[in-house]
Length: 140
Image 1: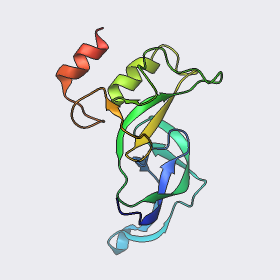
Image 2: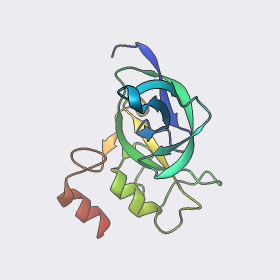
Image 3: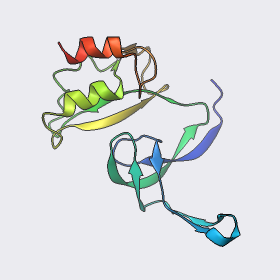
């Protein structure tokens, strides 16, 4: 994999790059960009659905999110519905796991270079997986 590094904006809470930030534009001049949100300001993460501090992180330009996990809780325990630390889940699967106690568990975005030989617990796009596989997991 090409190791060309680029600074990306990410959610401080879950690590996802699927974020929104506020920008200043000139509406009477074809929405010319005046200034963007600086790192450390609050933005919105579309994955964890939280207002979060937006930070920058050097990431390989070819890196992409391959799935999600439920992050360890304050006692460093793995979520009981996760099979193993190398298993990667879809966003709906992880949100289903967390639904019982959002205060204890956190979403964690997994990039393609985070886990060596990950096991995918879904088919398709991690944010919009194949529903047939999702139904099996959620109705267990």
